[in-house]
Length: 146
Image (cartoon, rainbow, N blue to C red; front, top):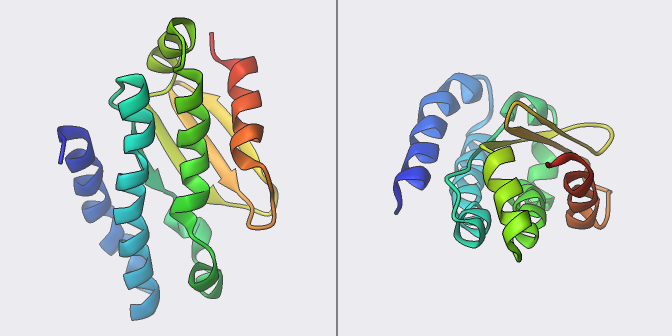
């Protein structure tokens, strides 16, 4: 486990109990599992781009969607953001832009899919029924990164 994966897991471990206190055991277990999977998915961008990007879920946005987490993989949806950014690192210009522009990724659940890059934080609002998420995020990054 590299230092950045360890740092992400430490952050998750510190924040998870605060968020999960009012949730069912099943939801808490699912959040922990998704956090572990998110750390694995994070390797996509860090390996491809040579970055030290961190990531975390905005768990309060998932609070009323316990049943959905039994059906959908939040880490898989969030992984689309990593895949999109990693695909830009195929050349030197893209790698430089990702390295300078993206420091962390925040994944949350919303009624509409959205992506925003502000002050080095890529915030991806996922929506379960949206398709072609990696392409959607990549298009945004191509327009936004410098």
